[in-house]
Image 1 (cartoon, rainbow, N blue to C red):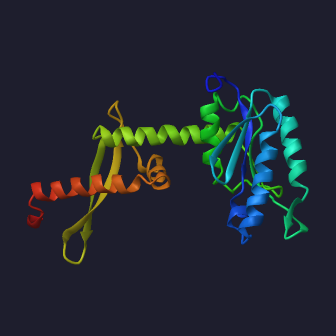
Image 2 (image 1 turned 180 degrees about the vertical axis):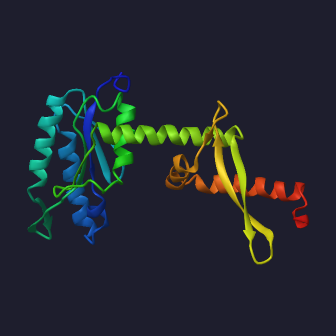
Image 3 (image 1 turned 180 degrees about the horizontal axis):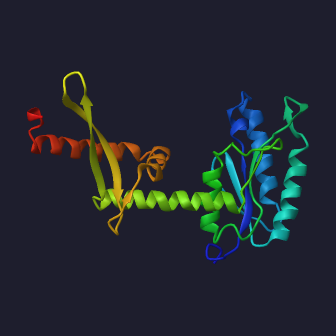
Length: 231
């Protein structure tokens, strides 16, 4: 039922720095338990734990979201208390907030979770309050990247990666001494997609290795088919 709902808003709390800090395990366990209990009691939140260091709180309505973000920020502005051998001590925990304030940004809970996990590693737009605000422009850019990636994978699967060879001429010898292999995507309508539209996506998503292998294999087949020593 919840996964099918539309127009979800929410935020993700990331505690990477907290878990990476040099804190005794007993103290860490005590504070972590307090944080978990606090988050579990945030009103009207659907709570997910994408990883050990993260908590995602999703809401069906903006008014619930706004009230919850205020509650959470107020609590984390205060110190957390723990007992160490009978002595009361305190520590401040400052999570990273990845916030999706508009219910119209994501079309479903599943898409919201995907966006939160994607943008949690994007620190470029983090403000002084350790927040990343995900707005419509951010989401549209991600969707564009997703579509470009799908197009790249489809082109590789359908063998629509075209390789062109740019000959390199040596003036001194008067011969073509080598050539540069240039990758292009042949679209389904037969048009050629330039590298600027897919090479950055391949590099950012780890697909550049597979693409490079396709170009290498096609280059080897070309060399084998034609006796290039005659040129």
